[in-house]
Image (cartoon, rainbow, N blue to C red; front, side, top):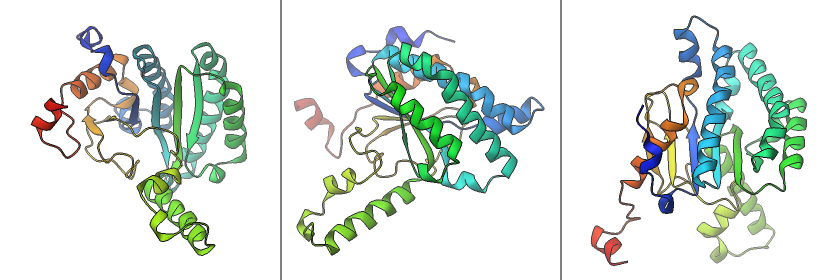
Amino acid sequence: MSNYKIHIDPNNVPRHIAIIMDGNGRWAKQKGEMRTFGHASGVEAVREALTGASELGVKHLTLYAFSTENWNRPKEEVDALMNLLVQTIVAEIDELNQNGVRLKAIGDIENLPDGCQEALEKGFEATKNNDRIELILALSYSSRWEIEQAVKTIAQEFHDKKISLDEINQDLISSNLSTNGIPDPELLIRTSGETRISNFLLWQLAYTELHFTPVLWPDFKAEHLYKAILDYQGRERRFGMVSEQITDN
């Protein structure tokens, strides 16, 4: 694989990269293994992505780890995923601290098993003072669920006369999402060759650059991350304007 890293402009690295980690099951099937083997093998890809992002100065890395729809998968797979989550967090806390990684999670965390919630809380507490990069796990998450919760909160505040109709704007909506305080991703990567965003960060991805790779998640390396960033750097981000306006600015 080419050395993409040396071609990256360090002054144009995304502050926030989001990744849909897809292809664990297919990867395992290709090897004649159970789907859970693919999920376990994907942990190394998380390390690769996190290390690569951190070295380039990315400040936020959001990983779509488990959607609300994933609860519909076979119980043995869900149980294995939850156990893997707990084991991985416990095993990685020291390394997260050594590398300045702060752990955060978004989603319906209260719907996770007690053991997962406890492991997450320990991870949050143990890494809260780290500031090199923030690793955000989207767990029991879906964007429509998130937006629904925000609408309910805002509607209740309006009903209670805490806000007026004129105060309901994009900033207020953003502040009621689980990503409040986190900048929107500049780059979204999806592995496995699928070209959809699967109910992930629908509000936040309004102007995000999308990069799709055929690589299955367990095979994802730092070099694939670098290639995606180079792809990002080769694009013109216009935000609704025309090229001439971007050049003038």
